[in-house]
Length: 108
Image (tube, rainbow, N blue to C red; front, side):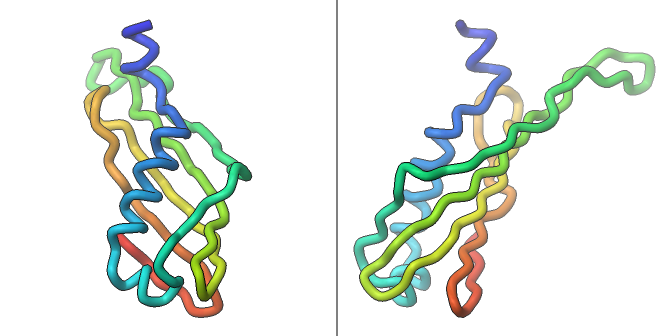
């Protein structure tokens, strides 16, 4: 159980972290409207994490999770695309959060 949590990425946790980041961004809330809500519809793809041979040493590559989900504010709807990389087995590093509406905004 411990090894699995160190090696894999939980997409539900990524979704919660992305929603927290979006709900605390003043620029996004100004454009979308105050209460941002997500849905249960989510799509994700896991990649990486395979064995690598570098400088004659065996290493495991870092895992990545690509997540896409719709959100709705009081004024507009949007589509959020998130790319996350697992760093050192513990911490998520947001590579990119991209929000697409009629106008396009990016939060990093």
